[in-house]
Length: 292
Image 1 (spheres, rainbow, N blue to C red):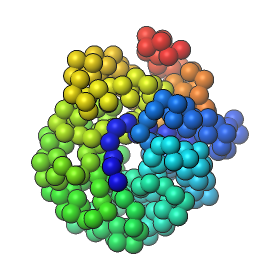
Image 2: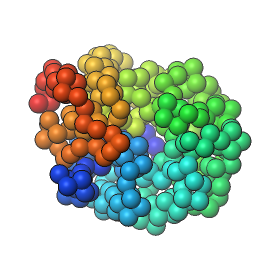
Image 3: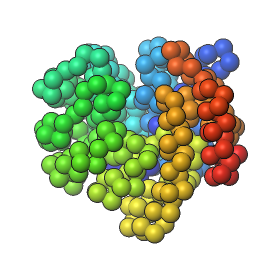
């Protein structure tokens, strides 16, 4: 399976009653298809997987696969800090027709590097689906070290990583150690362009929820070696990539989506809507990009 280009980490929209907005999710996915993204990532951390019920989690995967209709790839979020639960969600994603699974590093437990390796290895052995590991130490505490990533890359169906460490040093070492067939994807929008310059294959993006066309143009230009255009778009989108993390994600991106007329609603507790002053800052950036 080829992993390359822009993948949007789609939000999970909620109604005013705090229930899953199924029609809104479908409209959002169609918006992504219309803007020619390579794929979507439902029920990742941006999709508030931590506060979805098991039923909701599986429903979002079903909707994503159905609405995508084979036009774009679906990388379903199936990670957990319980290996058994991660296996269950990954099996469900495969049976539902997802193209691959995105699995976050186990959180809270603080496994050793050997524990991280054994976690992914076990899921990969139990479920024959392409797996992309996800390292985001700012939210899970545990990082996946490049040497551990090299071991994971040797497992047949572990095909890539979403790296949100923010470390270009780490990403350089991953690319050096894991080989050209292992897809290193940016997990931090502010450095999408530099990561592709190092050899990354694309990005799993938050900002593309609201700016899929511009973000896609940046990623595709960088992949084609059109550095003049990519650099211009990098600077143009830089403030958006910062402002959408002014508070804990996905609260800011949900605020932005509400402003541009996409389905989002509020985040679920313990996350809360962004402060009024931050909402105004988000709107100012959207206006500058002519998105509102």
